[in-house]
Length: 185
Image 1 (cartoon, rainbow, N blue to C red):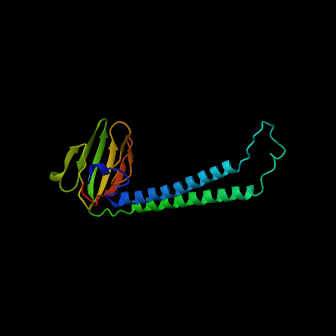
Image 2 (cartoon, rainbow, N blue to C red; image 1 turned 135 degrees about the vertical axis):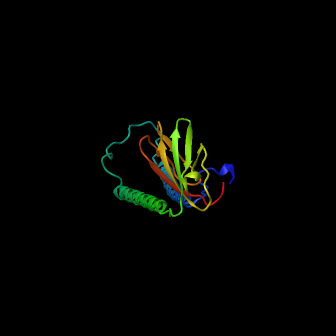
Image 3 (tube, helix red, strand yellow; image 1 turned 30 degrees about the vertical axis):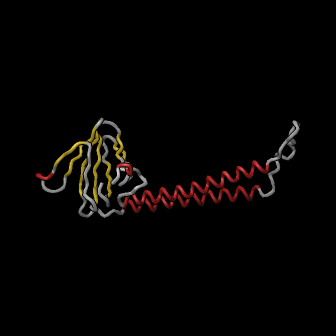
């Protein structure tokens, strides 16, 4: 894996691929909404009356809505609600997909966050095979990994961009992160 590819948009596992797919859905929809809003803004500027002489504005029509305004507002509200429902549904489906990683034969790792460093303990196999490292996590390719996360002192966050989403470590609480690496790196 290229060190320049340690970002959330280069997925090296199924969990990260689901997050990237969700990100692309959000990007596509938000880009479309932005383009429509900018087009409406430019149209409103083009359609606005141009006052050449300084005169008092006619306020007699202020309380009367423009013809078709109610229909336009109703259409905009409906489109907004529908787009939000699509984004919520995409988020829920992604959450369900993230929870479906089969954990049979998973590597078990315990991570404890300390101020300025991390303790990483590999707990699979017999006691003789249990060992600890500091600040680095090494996982096998093609095998699920289950990481149990704890904080020793303050709130920390663990994020492995190419493999999974971010998890917050809060003192006194145990968080669990499951992922799988499909490519070495």
